[in-house]
Length: 387
Image (cartoon, rainbow, N blue to C red; front, side):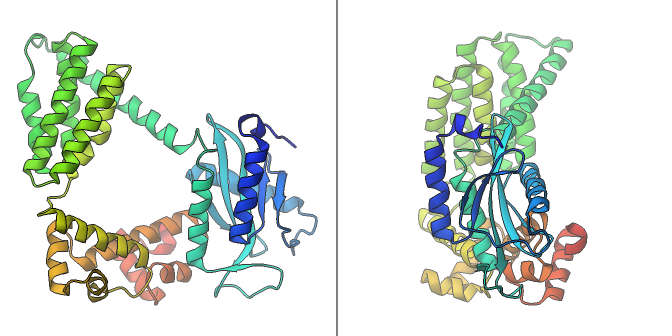
């Protein structure tokens, strides 16, 4: 049994975190090492019906831990004994140190009750898994976020380098500012095309590296000026002025403080989507109204939600909300609600082993056959084939 984890995170802090989690959730909590053996336990789990000694269970829990690493998020699974668990990996500097395991428990309404096991609703299971992820976020310091950022940086460097070599081969004049590339980038931002805007940005940076002869301070100054132009282009297409000017100010400060040109380029590239996809809000009032509507949908999409319900909650008429919602988001209320439900269904099908009927109910569909028809129309696959 290994306790390498405590070399990075004080054992007392981990104990307090897990004890608090068990007290709040009421489901047994165990800390597993990188081999799947238990280091700490809070709450006494019921003995397994299939493997009283727990040896087979330990191997199954370890496999679930590895599956959670692949997903980069908590993994909800049903063991061979028909009991549910949640596994969340602990990764530090790309090294697996173990996992936190919650369970066993049953899903209320989907399983026959057992006196020894807690029962949770499917909605609460999702909330618990998210809570676990956020609680362990400080421990999972080398996981998905860092790996994703590293991959994005490498991809950006590769694309800019390819453009640099291409322009060098074409023997472009190195002293002229690439105004045509800048205009193309701003045009794509105004058009709202993220991919074309990003490609134009890479082309522009390749030219700037050459025209500024790799001068770090000159390039950072050009990037700061470019952020101002991007903010203005986004505002011209109707985006929120205060938000975009605030973003420009934030990026200008980060570029000035960055240690390299590559880091500055990555900062702009990472925020390019915000400049490009900022929605054309008619006013601050409409901005707040639609944001409140989307937040309400996010909390209540699993219920029988209607436009009238949402308008009543917001204190406006249904026709007014419908018109404003379509104008701001580009989608009708029902289309947006369907998209939220379908994205949640896809996530549950990929990351859990819940029965399809349970997923249908959790996503606001009372009828599995109707859910299947809608899902197939939305994704091109039935829920079973998608899983």
